[in-house]
Amino acid sequence: MLLANRYQIVRMLGEGGFGQTFLAEDTQMPSRRMCVIKQLKPMTSELSVHQVIQERFQREAAILEKLGENHPQIPRLYAYFSDAGQFYLVQEWIEGKTLEQLATDSAHFNESSVRKVLLDLLPVLEFVHEQGMIHRDIKPENIILRNSNQESVLIDYGAVRETMGTVFNSRGNPTSSIVIGTPGYMPSEQAAGRPIPSSDLYSLGLTAIYLLTGKPPQMLETDPQTGEILWQQDAPQLSAEFSTILTQMVRSHPRDRYASATQLRSVLASPSATIPPAQTHQTRSAIATAMLASNPSSVVAPASPDRSKLITMGLIGSGFLIAALGISFFLNRDNAPTPVVQSPTASPTRSPSPSVQASPLTPPPDQPIPTRSPDMTPPPVQTPPAAAPAPSPKGQPLTGQAILAGIAGGQVRVYAEPSTRSTSPHYGLTGDEVTLLQEIKGDDRETWYYVKFPSGATGWIPEAQTRLDNDNPDLVDEFPRSAQLIGQTPGSRVNIRSAPSMSASSPNYGLVGDTVIALKQAQGDDGRFWYFVQFPSNATGWVRAEVIELTAP
Image (spheres, rainbow, N blue to C red):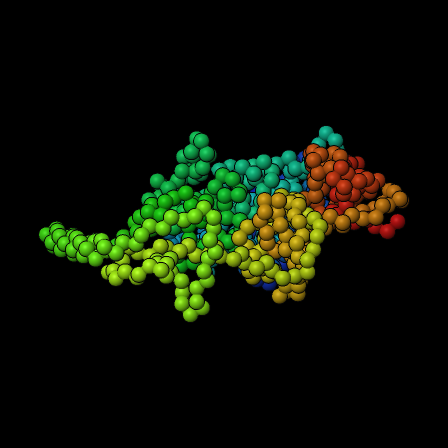
């Protein structure tokens, strides 16, 4: 079979609910290079839906092209086209075996080889997440070890497949009728249609556990009270450190996982990874025992002490102690200081001489200084003063509120310093409201804001990931107006709400780049401006002013 009068099908590679995947030969290239062709079938054949799918497919294909051109561990996109109501992607053919194939062929995966796979893939996820994308279908079948260098390659990104599930709901609004992901490998927030970057880390963690235990996620036990996956007993050969890392990757709640691929990579790459915060309930002794158990070759059995020597040394030490106490009692029995009865009224405190340090044991000047043996009682332990709080970063003081901007439901990194090279100990979510404290130019010459969250947490966020509360546009009188949905990442979602309020329901969404007609403007109950828009399908709804750009009247 010849597709597009160019691609000669060699054999089928796979088949699923969204279509088929073929290995093909490009007959119009001198090398007749091999390539992978993904045939994607829409869920519906309605003409109006097909037009929306066509637009979204083109945008998603452009994103795939950008990803493949800028990272060697992502297949390159050679071409895309549509034919007879079906859509096709032509991608680079990665010669190698998937992790699923290797596991099925009884390949042995140990801690070292699985750690290498993770360290290979985490930079890929860092890059993908920085582009505003989430893979959403990480599993052993979608990771190929390239034959030439044994490098891990991540394939089959879910965004394009999601466009195939586009339908119109009862109100005529475009929405997705499918959830991208593989049961067992995707976390609960992704199954609910709200994936975030740590969702990919969850899937990657379960992939690692599958390679180490040979058990797919559905066969692993779970805690009936917490819902956490109980897998450690199936891989007792692992070090406590690596087991702890994998456990945190597959925590059921996103807040308990690693915040980003960058954070996880730094933990894995360190020679002695620290126990993550989620594991601080373990006692120190338990952690120490676990770490010793993880490296038995370095543990030396202590020699058994000689009991007779211990008894002899104990008797000698006791004799010295009794003798010292007796001498002290004899010297001090006649020179005991007279008790001083303090008056209820406070007496002035005498200042010590600058050259002599006052001592709490110095007797009053009208009493003789007794001759006494060195005191066996240790001096009182003085509590050191509390450490002064770290000075706050110096920048231009600010007042006001801001909203974290980005992909709906996505994470926004919060940095310790105004630089992307500094640590990122925690993160916020798109839509979080923060208080502005300071403004400064970072070493990257970009503007940074020092912000405070309602929880009291503080940190630095780049200006590009904030939206000031006073960013509302001026009132517009002329309607209707042509407009376009805008955002940081082409193809990312824009929530369409039933009323001009963040608390209103969001039964569907548009995508950045969609063309709409703005019909009117209103100020919502949150004080922000909103636009009531109409899509080409005649679907309508409210969008926030910062995600829409009006064209000139």
